[in-house]
Structure formats: C-alpha cells, structure tokens
Length: 54
Image 1 (cartoon, one colour):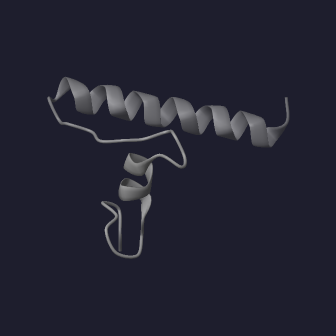
Image 2 (tube, rainbow, N blue to C red; image 1 turned 45 degrees about the vertical axis):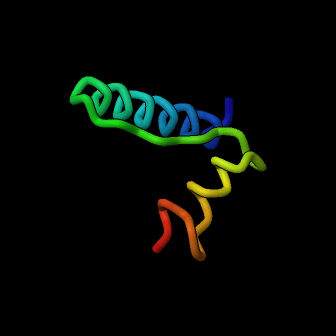
C-alpha cells in the first residue's frame, strides 16, 4: 500500500469517527456521496446555492 493510500484511509477513518461523534451529540449531518445527484449538487455547489459555499 502506498503512502497516499494510507493517508486516504486515515482521512476516511478520521471523518468517520467525527461523524459518529457528532451523531452521538444529536447533531444532524447532511451529506451526499453520489456525485451527479441533485442533493449532491445542492450541497457541494460553491457558487450560489451550495450549503458549503464560501
């Protein structure tokens, strides 16, 4: 496994743990892992309607 692949796995693990911790705090998390879907476009549109714009 390359260093890059290890880094990706560590990053995934970090964010998975962060999401689990947030869910235990009863924080709602809106996410989409389906590129091309309408929800994904709304969440990730940095120009005008994206939730993570700015």
